[in-house]
Length: 242
Image 1 (tube, rainbow, N blue to C red):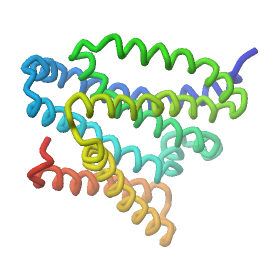
Image 2 (image 1 turned 90 degrees about the vertical axis):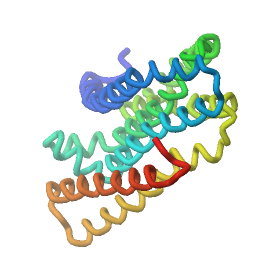
Image 3 (image 1 turned 120 degrees about the vertical axis):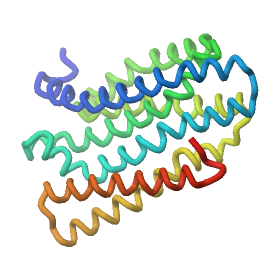
């Protein structure tokens, strides 16, 4: 018996393009940074490792957190313009939310994961991957049988969220980085700024009842504004440099 119908599988394949885009971006960042990471790890200078790890993590946090919030806040406009079908857009909206959240969680793991590989901590990676493999199949079966296509999207979110806090905690402890400082500076600051900017824009657009095309166009301008504010903060703050 199929877990998803052919129609739902096709719809999920549409959403998988979003996952692919996140993965391709993270793979590019990882490939660009890996030589520098391995060189720094070999030096074994803790202050240098701390600074570089935080800066590399910030590249992901300050680029993908605002983008993810932007896509979530303006998901209706994005899906309608992308798919050109209001019915499919409405049907995929709940799953789209979980796909974005799961893709962001996956992206936030890429820097800790890369540093573990550079340190040759393969045993930890195997244990973590093995544990996720054990829980994945029953979790996927339950979610898909219960929530259908949205369950498949929730599964993507769960399998990425579960190991994320552990990986961040493990690397912060190894590099003697204060847990709260990293969460605040790399994730919470761009998250808070993005929520304020995009929800303010959303309320304004709804008040004047903009057409979908205009709403998404101005939302994109708000995204670049958000990036400008965040990067200005990041580059001008003495303790927060890339």
